Length: 393
Image (cartoon, rainbow, N blue to C red; front, side, top):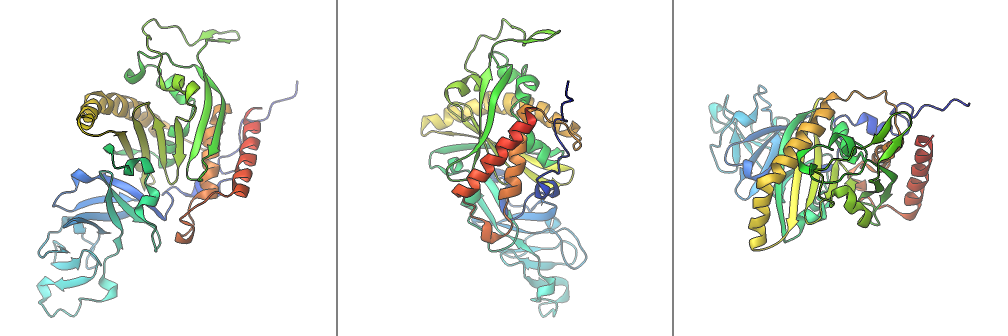
């Protein structure tokens, strides 16, 4: 019998830009904090390896580099001495929040000659508040409108958005690939409390990643298989469990509505749950940490808003976001060690995502509005089919 080829080659094959993006892709707006958590005091955080301080300035949110050029003290330790400014706690160097310009050096008097020079200014970052989140642009100017990088569902007038932001260990790419991955939920989440009463598929067939018509989303299609499989020499799996009395699981709904998952750059996964939607967004912090944002939303008004929020805080936040996503997915992300790796058929979704990033991630603000033309779509489908053939061997 002819020896079968290895399931995959090194991860660097075909997507060097993705492999080099250990600190994420620049030239994008990233959500970094729940808006309700930014109050009067400065808030320090790290995004794509850059140390930033957030602060409210009236009805605006400002973001500056979190380092005083004088002696390197974090500006997040500072205070407001004057409206529209932030003063370093050490020597009183005072910066304009909008421009980052040094407008006063308090301990050198009102006529200090160090002020208003470009070399002592602090770098500023565009920052906006949308969908109950603070968004910061990391990259070269000019920046695109923030709305261009926010899933359109979150901006709907009747969208009731409930975000949850956590700092976690692990490479952001592992976290995003876990979200894109079709197969892991069938095993890892089989006994998660969120799905414990539902019949779950054992595996899936025909996994496909297909670009949306506007080129913004990479949609995942598959057909779930609920029948027991007969594994040669081993027996049947999955076992029949009497307590699984409900039949409207996410996987089963996929038979009727195959597009229940989709990914978009720079690092967002959308999952449909019937009458509500979940966005998982993974923001690089440094090479060993990332922010996981679980943003749940439902389009509703009036009393429906209260009922949705009660439902979210009653069980979705704890069972889905906590016990399933954090305790299971988050755990796997901390354990992963790849490359090298060997892939199998269901990993076609991961391979497609890597290729999507390689081909589509912004290189400069001039390419910020990415439109997938017919030729590019045809080429992506061609390479996707080649990858699929390789993983089927």
